[in-house]
Length: 297
Image (cartoon, one colour):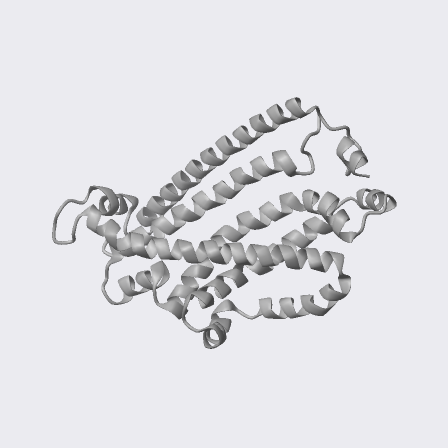
C-alpha cells in the first residue's frame, strides 16, 4: 500500500512529478508566495496609515488625544532630548510591555491551535466524542469573553497561566470549526482506497485527511493571529495588569500619555500584520512540500 500511495496522488490518482522537477517547482512557488506576502504586508500597512490620517482629518479630532502617523513617527524615531524624553527613552518604555504581550500572544496562539487541531481530528475520527463535547464547546463559545474572564481569574489566578488560557480560548473556537471542516472535506474516494488496502483510522488520517486539511489549518492560523493578540491584551487588562493591554489603559486614564498609547497600538498592529503575512508565507512553503497538490506535474 505504501508504494501505491507514494506513486500517485492518493486524492486524485495524478502521477507525482520527478523529485528534481518537483523540488525546483516547489522552491519557485514558495519564493513567489513569500514575495507576495511581503508585498501584501507593506500594502496593508500603507492602507492603515492612509485611513488613519484621513479619519483624523475628516472628523477633525483633537490632536492632544488623537495622534497622527507623523506624531507617532516623531515619538518613536525623531524626538530628541526634551521634557517628554527622547525616542530612545520612549522605546525603553514600550519594548518591555510589547515583548511581554507578544510572548503572551505567541504561547496562547500555539496552545490554542494545538488543542484545536487535536480536538478537530478527534471529533472527525470519533463521532461519539464530538456528540458529547461539541455542544459544551458551543455553549462556552456563546458566553462573552469579558463575562467569562472573572471566573477564569478565580480558577487560574492572575499569572501567566490565566493569560494563556484566555488567549487560547480566543484562538481555539474559530480554529476548531475551520480545521474540522477541512478534515471533513477530504475525498471519500481517497479514504475508501486506503481502507481497501487495510489502512486504519490513524493511517487514513495521516495519509489523506491531514495533508488535505493543511489549507484549512493555515487559514485558521491566519485568522487566529489577530485573535491571539486581542486575547492577550484583554487578559492583561482584566487579569494580570501588565503588558501593553494594561499600559495603554493607564496611559489613557491616569497619566494622559496619549503618544505612548497610540505608539503602543501602532506597534501591536504592525506585529499583527507581520505575523499574519508570516503565517501566509509559511503556508506557501509548507503546502508546496506537504499539501494536497505537492508533487503534481
